[in-house]
Length: 589
Image (cartoon, rainbow, N blue to C red; front, side, top):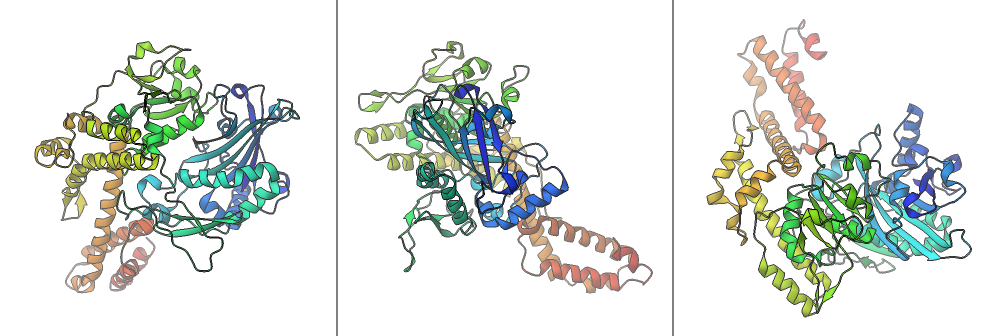
């Protein structure tokens, strides 16, 4: 699938972009079929014919679709732009006029799919993938490679074009590595080259958690491993696996999703504890940086900082005033939403005056051998035009800073420790901190099981708080502070709600699986011999309800092979043992 967006503008900040679908359902005559419904990820499904056409397109490009939704080419076109309806994906594909990006720039955005479009489901992949790497069901990621260079032959005096990979997968490092490989050559060879790349992607094996894959692209091979939810958190890096006849030798990507955390956080290292708490609690947060790269990487780094806990609030790595949700997120008639926004336009400082937490990042400045750290400042210090770098908030952290970590990282800078090693230290610290926080909750929920009938009883916040003195995070974390206060505020956040719903669903499905297996091991026909018709009918109805629920849960209900078929056979046998006049009634239900 592919879409061809174009924009018309006098400046970055006032673009009139649009998505242009190629004629006859093809990408400029290329050899891979598309349809308007399939090509535009923002487009809702309309008539049944369009839905059928989209389904046919996905079937023809099933492997491609398992990785990407579409590929977009976005450029400025002074003649065509205003004649076509605008699309958010085009605005998000260009830095705004305040960024001043010359040369090549890479960044990431995330946008909500259009209203009316069917939510995407991938039960098998999401069942086996870590919750932080599951496919988005109602959002898309856009991975952008933007080039702006002087060109006197262009009316604007500049060549300005973006190549965008749109996907539901949060594989930030993989897709940006792919763009680094294909984008420079695409800008020279244009559409035939892009057609060849898409055909190669359509030959890739689907992303399968736990597997190491070799992905051929333009004469090279990328070797990756798709993480699985059974992996040990913070496990060892990927080791290269080569095949004897694999030429050329593959390029190993040690990760498909992790960022350079140290690069993202180097100017806020002394405030890392505060940023982790704000992210954990799902607080409304704005990250303002000089470039789309800086703001998008920082937002994604914050979202990943609470891993293996899934960030259940909304987040937009790069957000502009043209975004569809701009009014929704900037209204002053209600409290700011639980969202993390990455922006570059200084206009947002005035717009977000009522937001409780704003992080203003600048270009990295050195104080001797160390990067200069921003300061925490009062919100009243925010100024529209000359706001200095800083964290503008009245928030008081529940936990104390980890001074040992800060000293270790700062000493690493002085000793020229590689950024990869610094990031590994940061990632390990954040992982252990999040695990220390979440493990007491996991243990508590596991004690909520009622054996007869098997079910999970409601979670009691006060009961949990009362156990913290003996089972709390202080047993595994050196940090001191008000853990109870942090938990109480966490209970009111979308992140707790999302986490608890997920755990409750997993435990309920596990109990249901065990219960189904126990029922199938029992002598149900023997039990019915001395039972009345009413009791047998009641059992049949209850078993049929379990069978229907088991079928609906599908791959998420991991029962032994043949269990559901065996239960269906039991039900049919019991129905057959009843009087003939009653059997048709039960068989029609």
